[in-house]
Length: 228
View 1 (tube, rainbow, N blue to C red):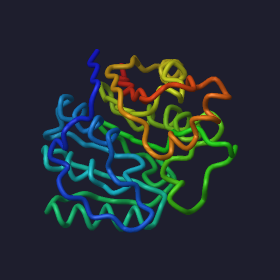
View 2 (view 1 turned 60 degrees about the vertical axis):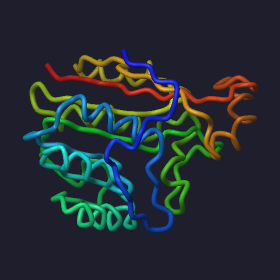
View 3 (view 1 turned 180 degrees about the vertical axis):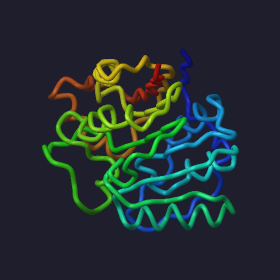
């Protein structure tokens, strides 16, 4: 397992165009990019779920992958297309709710950096910047759906790389993927200073027992799952 205690470098994600309200690549994006690079992309069919700005999708295309990207947000889809054009890379970007945008399609590699921050509201936002990070009371509103849907999109020997916060229960992710027949484990851990959202919610997260009141860093994880 790889453990990192500082922010990773940009890893070639490069300059990213971004419309208002679209998630800007941050530590989790670069963390996932490094895992993607190590995995090997050249010549493989890659799906980027919850693509946001499309920075990771363009990076995968730069590494030689045949890349498809999906996001439910209209501005994110437009931003991802603009970033693919700016990078001069071919990325097929679709608007839709996870895999509903690509019925019957399968891939060698699925990567995702979905919303995963626990929020005081049980539902998920339908608009606004918080749509990119709020994920219900336990932070698993999207994670559970991806765990349930991704196995059907993976070819034999295919791999899922899923990044999220340790406060969103990585063990639940591993168990859920295993229930679908995948070999899953936490492959990487990384510690980063809290960003504005997590800092603002620290009292609430502490009251729920998800973080200690004096914690200053967030643990990010990558769950890697492989089909038989």
